[in-house]
Image (cartoon, rainbow, N blue to C red; front, side, top):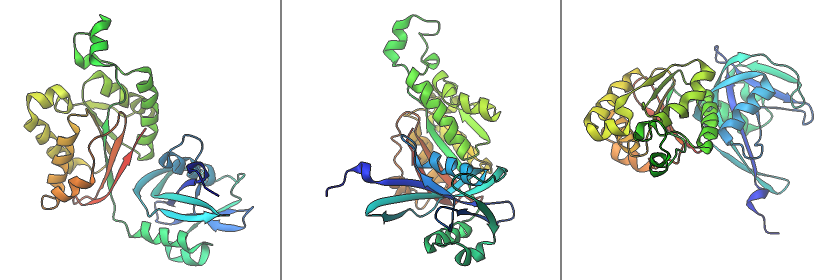
Length: 306
């Protein structure tokens, strides 16, 4: 029988650790097994947001995601299944027995082989524990905006200024999803082009998380055109300050310079090779997530579409 893409089972989960380094493992009564928090994606849901939702549903804890872990592929009753996982830190919440999970334990990672029912889960724990401490830097393209010509033709207040161009209704919906993505990484600092479309993109997250949006002229298209060296200089100066999860919201033409500056700064000898692996051509509201150590090592890169 020929299978379609709809036959593929997609799932996501986390290796969740607390402040002491212990790992959350869950007991699923219907399966009578000990597993890591994970589950199937809902319709239209991304792996990233499914991992967060499943963690909260099964453990009661809100996770902040770190670098991704190895993807797994296997078959369930002859149907292919893929599971994407992330390392994660529990920041709030408490376990309550639910439909999926009837018990939760926090275990020492060294006990994973003995407690977990599946060797693949124990291998993910080992991988998560071996990761260095990192902070994510998100490079985000603003959500879908009204076209330049259409904005100019409206005759609205500010229609003669591109900086005042707003998001479309679709872009406003995208900005709500962007808020969930930024929340998944626990973003604590948001820097944005002063352009209205960028501020609107990160606005829902700023309101949700109580995070002030720092407006930076050098991240605007106008600033980039006026003085690209100043844009690069700003990004270089920002990198030593990325000790907390940070997001940059800017424009499609500016993103290649931002990424090239980051790569040149953290890995001047391997930047050219690294750049070929990171595609700066982001869709509206898409984000690149660079997981950086305190010493500037690039541990992982993710690309998330909204």
